[in-house]
Image (cartoon, rainbow, N blue to C red; front, side):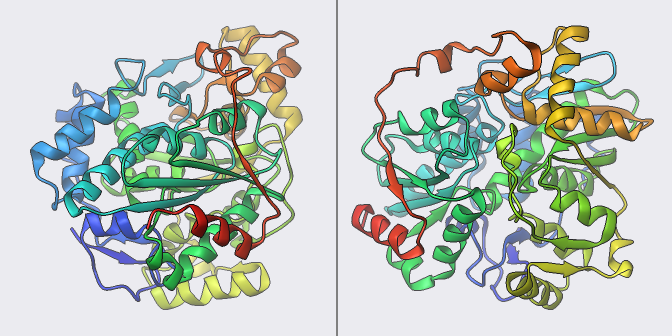
Length: 458
């Protein structure tokens, strides 16, 4: 299996090279040349563990790591989860909740970043190399990425987060990690500002190559690949006799739901992929209008979704416009210069699985309260957005909503919704009062690059 860029100006490369490249060198995103179809195998996967499914799927996309080594990477990566199913589905009266928060940082990002951290270590050991990771986070990616590589030899990690725009506990999960290879940067502005700095830095190929920069954000293909696994695993837990299942996905950067699109493209019987947005509804507006138009960032109680530029959207757009890299280059340049792209109906008609709508803070709080009172189940704000949108669409198929984070990460929102101090977890309680370390920055590209250059492995 080889990997190509959505913008068509990168020669096909192997998996390990794709992992180390992160963002494509032509400014696009790396994707596999094809999606293997496993429709005829799914029934035989019914009783497989998460790890066994992961190995089967990864083996289809990774042909430059020996099978035994790949199996060891899988086992090592998911041994850190506190549930035997890794990503269990809790069945409620109207839908299932796919709990993706059983990893070390209590967020869905752990599923991919535990694997990616071990993958980086494996490749660097093999190549006797060094890596400086640069990432941006709206809350959970940062702590999961840090947890995946903290203390590892030959890796330094630099994570930017919008100062004061994550939950206090999310920030504490990052800044309380004091290993010498971990550098947290609190940036004035929004997540989009952080992500913009990251993308501009990766686009500066001289800088990227000089400092051996690597990506942990979902621009890295390995992140998306790892996330496809839990769609198959969740399907096995809820489906009967090959029936179709719909998945509701609280969405900010489009990586989590794009993994579902890949699963469907591989033959998983998915009916609808429900894109659920909060007040930052650029993606839901697109699927209902064909217009992708940037607006101002609204800061909400679901901060991981407070995004106006979804970095993974380009991957889906590539398939929507019939794999036309020239069309992608044109669209992305137009969006960069004007903040708006209009996709013609002839391409929008290619969408056969996405439905989209948005929620708001009032509805999110009401959904948390409702599910606590009626189901004795506590939703975090992001998951509540997904549940609210899924309920509003009245789908006929079974619905699984992806639960992206443990509610204990958002105690203020839970308190506001329920009137009770319910949001607690021992891992987070242990962090309170911890020593922290963080660099403050104004959000200037050159300032960030200078800080990285001063502290990078070289």
